[in-house]
Image (tube, rainbow over all chains, first blue to last red; front, top):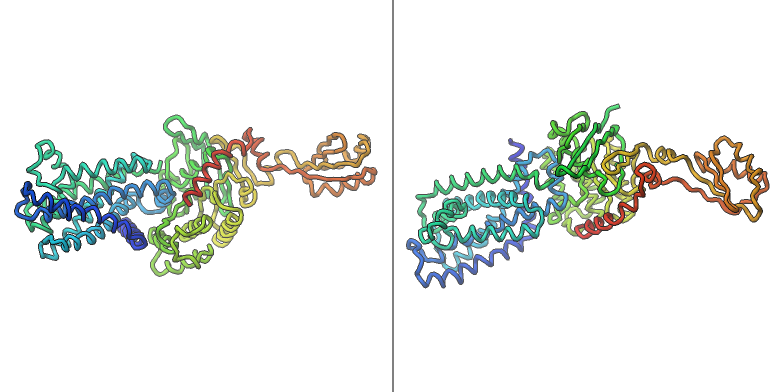
Length: 254
Length: 332
């Protein structure tokens, strides 16, 4: 168990080393959420059509668009696993004494590292364009931890999908086809109450909504009444995905 | 003798129809360099993936140092190193970082880590480029880095799947020189797959030939070639008609197995051409038959393959080999 934990840390270290050598992806991926915050936010906000509970619309969507980006990064992370299957890396990792689940969980959590750095690029920019955050360092830290763990869950989801896809091209399509619906059927851009009831039902099973709700509470509104539910939902999501991805890893290599 | 690998009646059927391994029986002795030779698609990689605990056989058993690869997989994984056919290092970090990550995965104690990594880099001649991104390495350097990774844990057996595919001859030679040093220093058993006959010929103590999921022959390179009957010496005699009676003296030599005559050339089948040649030359000279040209033809592993697998090696391998090699180059 201790060994497995150590292996997960090595995977995270590996990711940080890769990130250190090539940071362009983090910068270029920050462009999209910035556009949401600087263009879409003010324009939609000026229409005053969306009830945000008293916060400016741009502030309201900041956690959502940021998490959309980190989620997309995590989902694409499964692609790395497909690539590593094409190359021999995954095969070699599986022939080491490291338990298989530690490879899956470790690689997944490694994507959380990317997500945190991504958030750390986006947040100062949001601050600079006038988004007001809850001035509480503990909340801020907790928000980063939520993003870190949730990204791990999404990365495990993508490893699970990758184990069925097996080619990069197919996976790319699926990656898009999953993140966008998750994004639109969540509370990232509008409160759940505005959605048609069918969508609201779906949203109750959408992990992204819980992540956005938690981070929005911690960073923007300071309202933590549903934080516990959010954290439980994220934990269930993560454990389910870690388990499924570990089991299906066999499919990737065969 | 302690057996490094022992395989009994191993069968692997993919998707219920493709019979990749069809009853393989094989043993490999400890400390030997063992080559599994066969064309692409013969089942080499499947066998290696079963031995390295990646996939399970459909039936039959395989043991590595007495450990069952299915039931004692985690113990097996502690004894072995494996280098897959495809590139297996991260290209977006440096060579040193690759080794560091593997050292940590293998749980090498902190105080030994630096020393072992340095040693591995030095043995593989990569000290000078250790901090460069692997992306900038040549194919040969990447292979040497992979071997360095495999050396880190001082395994008891190394499994190499096509260790020199896509490498130029000089790089191939360099890789094997390093491997042999490693084998000698640490008495590690080397089990490698190859479809290069010369590679099996030069670097394997023992060879098993695999074709369509079956081991069709095994032995040393010499042994396999001699099993074909012997070596052929052909003499071209100057201008005079060959008198069959003159050849009687040659026939009397105990090592001569057969003689055939065609126009002005005599072909003699012997066990060992180099040893026999001087004696035959003496006889020919005594018989006043001036020889203008001598040629020796020895059986190759290709001939061995033809005999035991019933087909030419090259014909089957060529196209898929080219495709595969290109793919490797594109990646590397």
